[in-house]
Length: 376
Image (cartoon, rainbow, N blue to C red; front, side, top):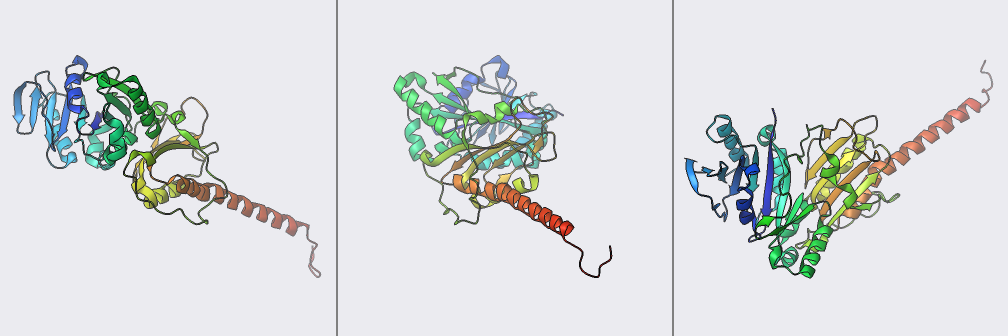
């Protein structure tokens, strides 16, 4: 059974989400969409409603299904799926979840990627974030929700570009690239996107063996950070810092390992990082070369949650190596680097040293003369 792609559409208050969505739903290729709108401060879509299926579900004039989320998201998605299954609403091909502008995205992603009911019928096709072209720079500095929304986006939409000066657009674009270099960027003028907004195929699904990992990961866009040798956890640990309340401290980087990694040691390192600094890890994603395996593993995490890894059929083009992308809020990069050094480099060194000692002992024993009185 094919899962239904679900796209999260978010952005701060007044960033133009609803205007953009109204325009998108007028395109014939999106007429088979379902829209879930968060109830807090939601502005109704300005389509003419031609049929009321129930209090919280309507069918728009172009055939799209529109619902208001009342209560748990998992329950709303489950009810929507079964109404589709029973023929009570048109058979939509995708779901667009428009969230409130004050929503912090990490808890939402946690639920979408972890809840068994959601995973049974849906797959996350990406996070699309509207950034106000006029006020976006100031909002990133003063509204923590904006910086976090930008940090976890798969696609950034700069809205109201018709009101922006070229220098203003360049400054905002540069700032967004610093916070989230992996996200695709689309300009929006007069509520109309000048590029692709939705991508049903760009979904993370642990069971999807055909994931376009290069497009999903975009590791080449991130600053490469080498794991520091001989640092380890034995040194004085970095102090715990509260997540920043502005975008200046959000950092995006990629750890790269050229040699296959022992899975147990890697998993232990990741679990420790998320347990101790998970609140600051806005997003983690990567492709892993595991010792003893010919196929790559794909991992994904949000804050303290590490989701079950998926297995790809083949390696993508390019070097076969482990690439782990982190987007973090606050001074946590060194702790992550030291943790990987301790559990991977230091343990590998310890095993090598132990093996060398064992080999030396065996060589000494074999070369030693027999003790007196021992017959050979």
